[in-house]
Image (cartoon, rainbow, N blue to C red; front, side, top):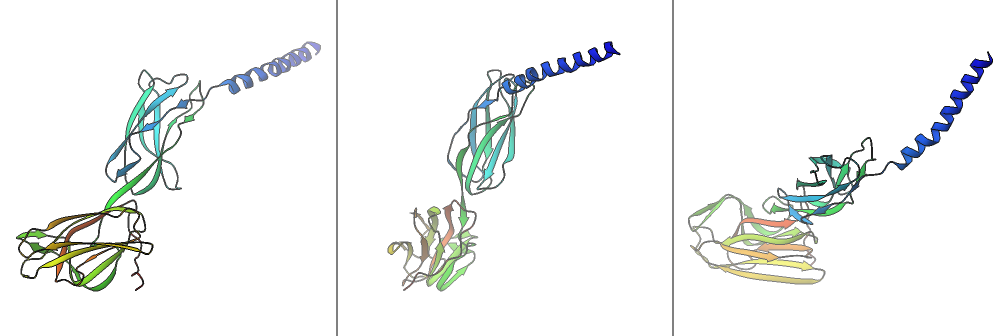
Length: 261
């Protein structure tokens, strides 16, 4: 009986002596360090952002990594998986799928010799071209959305104005408007295409003369910082905007209100 008691005591003592060693080894296990760089902080939907970096830590060569993206304050989602090279470097491409503020990070999962590690986050903003024939707007006067022909060329997306305008709430989230302006076939009136922006109490407008039978003129207007954008015919004759788009960091414009008179 005494021999058995001594054996049990010895075993308990051995376990007790090993416990600190195991705990110390676990505490000493390093964490993967992941560096990250991105090729852009702004990109249109459909384009890609290049992500690259290096992983430091045990067994970091040929290690599988997860590239993650977070939209706004949403959850992180894995969008790509990539392996490091023999020199522990990695590279991946992330496709921009939506507009707005987003973040990228790269994760190195845990291994037998190191704890999981994550890179710092890198921010970027997705942008997209929005079709102004389908965006929320406030009307002033008469305008018609529908296909037109200008100088023999057919356009599927167009807005024709007759002493009218359309107002869009761009609220500082858009930077450029692009379209063609002209007089649709069958009309013989000289006209002007008008664009207008408001920022606080400041108004700024431009006029583009257009003539019957002439090809649509390219109109490009920088509207960075503008709160409201408007386009139309003003007090001139009928005029048409073809393929009108606005470049914004949102997926859809907010509802618009006419400015106070």
